[in-house]
Image (cartoon, rainbow over all chains, first blue to last red; front, top):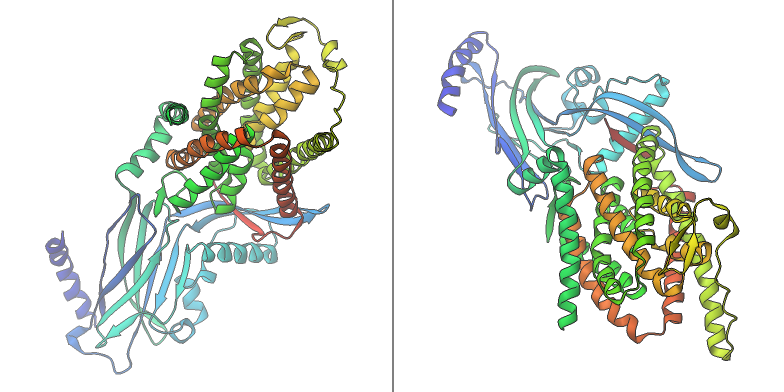
Length: 253
Length: 304
């Protein structure tokens, strides 16, 4: 895989160098994250090199921004309100594309790297996510729901902001560490790296990461979904046999 | 010891879940109840999604009631005919529960309904139990015997058409009464993950007027089969039964249940009942506070 990638990128490298633009050569520590019985989350290392044309480094050091994103979900958010003395779900809003996971890291605080507009275009920061609301709420209401979602997912470790944590050594090698919560869903994730110079994105590159359940966990999830009758029978058989066995053993003691 | 739950999609501390199952099992052994009324709220409190909690708690109740049913069957204290009718009703009720579950989920009120049902059910039964056990305790202390209630069924039950003989229960009543009773508990089992012994035992005693000897055995018999049916329905419809979670709960609860049974033989039943009443009222109060106080999470996300 790797040699082919190099060969494939060589012409592009030449082409880009000719265009006098730097390019990014990114990689991640794990292309496949497997969820197993002991999965309590993972730390992903996103690293790579910045290749400048002719090896000339700019006088002013560039910034790196790394965004790790999970599959989009269509969600319904509900908001509790106090009605007749008890808290019940009252208002709701629907969003068509809320990322199930979003983590961002940068080499400096975000406001020193890009302006508001650029951040909005590239969805840099959890408050810049474009969730595509599909229900008819007022904009103030939508904003409230969006804040609620971000707060909820930040505390679950599903939305992460790590500004100022990307290390750049010698101006050409960068590395960032982003935590994957144990609550991530399976699917195809993307790790995007942006090279930012003077508030402008000058290069971008993307790497795919697959998160899947493996072994026993995968088998269980598939069995519950596909062979639900047998799965149910197994659950019942397990419960009955364990309860019976415990009773039988206890009689002997 | 962290363990990943494949259906709940999160990792939990296995020892905590086993301990939780153990405590619930201990109570269920001591008091002869399934303990689902404690498992579901505790699991939700721990962070397990409510649907997964209710679905997996049902199978724990199955495990906790098996050995009880075996014992009662061998002693002949199960009215199989009555149990059969109750189970029929229970399975119907579980079916209705599935539809209700879906409906409530669609309008986003499932959590509130579960909360209110818990408060009403546990609060009501808890108060009833507390009143009775205090009376029993007073009688014990003063040495006076309470006049035993005359065993008879409720006038509404007598009004129902068609009558069957239930020999073990000492009844000649319409099978519609236990069928409806079974249905009500079936709905509760599906929605809350509880066995329904709480409702069944007093209802069998005071509404149907069954003989006390066969009440506990028959209710356990019904609970065993209805929780089995519920587990199956959850597996087929919500697909929320987490086998790993159920296994952990079972390990704890079947062991706890045996210990609990031993304890129950050494303690006076009057004290046991007042203790149970206190626990039930405590859970009800906690749930009521949860409804009234501003919750930690104002927002909930539902993926569709």
